[in-house]
Length: 76
Image 1 (cartoon, one colour):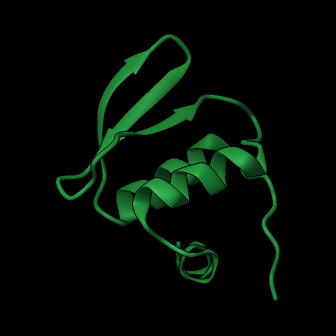
Image 2 (image 1 turned 60 degrees about the horizontal axis):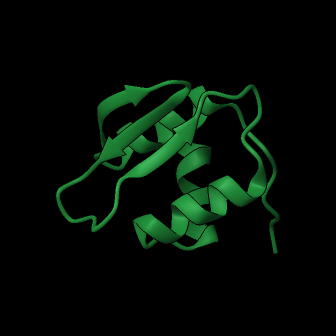
């Protein structure tokens, strides 16, 4: 089983754009993304390396599992 590692917020942003999210707004050092089928926005802090817990929480908001996420990261 693959494990999750921290990635840059720019790489995570590419992932969000790939799955259809759009940048809604920026507030301070956080970027907020939205997609029509989501009940909550995806919030990404502009940090060099996003902590694993931030990635996991955002995957939960997106309704994706770890395997789907890692497969998409390989493609982009």
